[in-house]
Amino acid sequence: MTLPGRPSILLTVLGSCALAAAPAVAAPLFTAVPAQSSLGFVGTQQGEKFTGAIRDFDARIEYAPDDLATSKLEVAIRLKSMDTKSPDRDQALATADWFDFARFPTATFRTIAIRATPGGPVGDADLTIKGHTKRVAFPFAWKAAAGGATLDARLTLDRLDFGLGAGDWADESMVGRKVDVVVHLTLAATPAKPAKP
Amino acid sequence: MPLRSTATSWGAVTRLFHWGMLLLIIGGISVGLYMTDLPMSPQKLRVYALHKSVGLTLLGLAVLRLLWRLGERRPAAAPMPAWQERAASATHVLLYGLMFAIPLSGWLFNSAAGFPLQWFHLVNLPALVAADPALKVLARTAHGFGVLLLVVISAVHAAAALKHHFIDRDRTLRAMLPLPGDSK
Ligand code: HEM
Ligand code: HEM
Image (cartoon, rainbow over all chains, first blue to last red; front, top):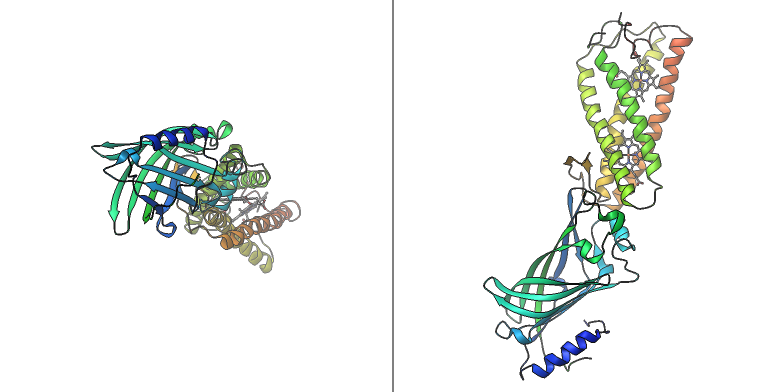
């Protein structure tokens, strides 16, 4: 599993700052085990909840509970793999009114910092969907397990922050604005590889 | 006009069901035919939602109408050959069957397609089955075919009513028409 290339200039700059400031040991690297990980969401259409699953995503997690400064979470999500159990709805979601898969095939999630809070770790992350980037707080639960860890999180987004279903579709009685994202990652510890550009 | 049917005439409740549902059916069919070719938009979903709400209303009315009818006497038929009487009864049974089969196949299609189902923005109804592409095609065909059958059978049924009225000059039609002062 690889992250698609094209890191933004901002990230390159941030990355080199982090490198310069990082202690000799970085947080260990994990990658998601696809068969045991899920990225889903719950939306509302005409008063009825529906669930969507996104099957194709790469998670690159560098995390150590006691070394949050060098920890980071990065996820690249290939939106085309979205399945809401209704081909008609999936077709609509692909269009320019919604995700516009043709122009924006990938959504990205990258933490800028991770803080310890009494309730557990919280990432401050940039979430980019359809060319709109929003800073979100991402509280998550981390559990170490043999050979890796699990990460669980739940996050509520406003679809209009990302230009999803703007204009005529903004009407909430048709499609609710709030979307709950549910993340469950089973992570395998991955031997450190030479850093990729 | 008495609420209940008499020996010679259909009661007010039966007449209200008959003509009220006829109007709603015409509305439902018109909306149904209009909506499918609309380009995808929230407006399209609103028109679909209206169609489904009207259709579900018709399903509810069909239940009430059948229950009411089962407790009613049937006015004596005007004199006619036995085969015509049997044909009329068979037609009525078929029409009742379609009053259920059409909205139920619509509901089934809606479920198999994974669409939401809401009655006039008020209550959400459960899916009858999980999303299923094969069943979706089948239910869609049944829905369209059911409507076609209803149109054909209603046309025969209405033609028969007109024949009774204008050719046989009996009171079959008047016994069902929503006219006051004709309840004898
Ligand atoms: C007596 C009640 C109903 C009548 C007379 C009726 C009639 C129709 C008609 C004429 C069409 C268009 C068919 C075509 O283009 O071939 C249609 C389509 C449709 N009906 Fe109904 N309908 C009824 C009830 C319902 C109900 C209760 C539902 C859903 C719960 C429903 C869901 C649909 C849907 C989703 C379509 C569109 C199919 C598509 O997109 O291809 N209908 N209906
Ligand atoms: C313009 C169209 C229509 C006309 C002129 C018409 C006329 C009539 C008449 C005169 C009767 C009384 C028959 C008798 O006493 O034996 C009748 C009964 C009946 N009609 Fe219609 N009808 C029409 C449309 C429909 C439609 C579309 C349906 C079905 C949805 C329908 C369902 C029935 C049923 C089930 C009965 C038996 C009485 C009852 O249980 O309500 N009719 N109709």
